[in-house]
Amino acid sequence: MNLILLLDLERIVLGGGVCEIGEPLRSGVEKWIEKTLIGNEHRPKIEVKLAKLGSSAGAIGAALSTTNFF
Image (tube, rainbow, N blue to C red):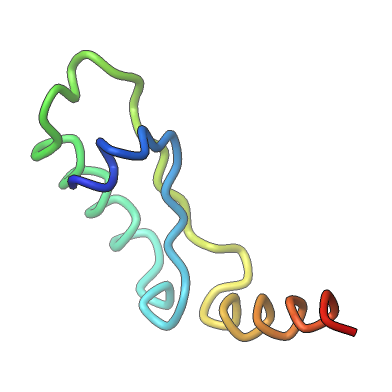
């Protein structure tokens, strides 16, 4: 929660293997944020999304980042 407040996030993207859970995870995280975030009633709703690449997002991102070195 502290990072959400510190960084003033507008969106959280969930990725990795846990993403396989799908919509129940996304909606659960969104509800948890709404319930526990201090001052939530005074800020825009934080959007929670699932990574489009699913559990492969980290591997694909790591592979693409190597193109910057070559």
